[in-house]
Image 1 (cartoon, rainbow, N blue to C red):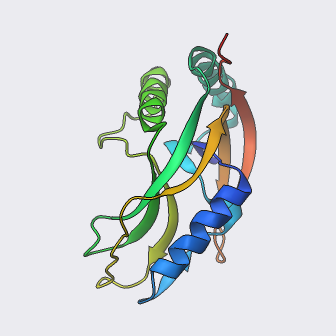
Image 2: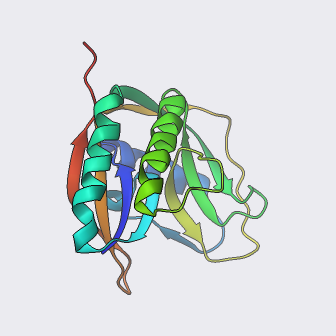
Image 3: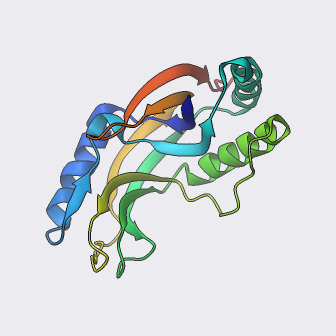
Length: 181
């Protein structure tokens, strides 16, 4: 199964981020994400065999047991690779970004012995909202603004099934983060 590890903010937060982004991006051809698919990817795993699932879940559970739950704030829009050559439109994370980077790094380290390749690029916490269909698309993000806050209390091992109308996601298993004592 094709999988990734992610945090899914509450649906109302995802819907509001998409609504605000749609008002900002007026030109070009854009394929907007469906609200139910908007998430913070912590690590893309690719194909995982059924027989490797138990070891993968054990490693995920161990990392999550050590990570204290935290709050995250959506703050500011942007584009990859740049605003002048926008291919992916996203909303970033303000408060909570250092915790997300730490969680992603810990997952990367814990999964390396299970033959999952380490990330080569630095982790940038963001929610992908849209992909442009034009090589010449540009995007002028407004000044950073508060867009909502949510609690990160668990991460999800998610299966992605690709289809002509877009991917569908299914939670394979959720892993609770440690509650502060």
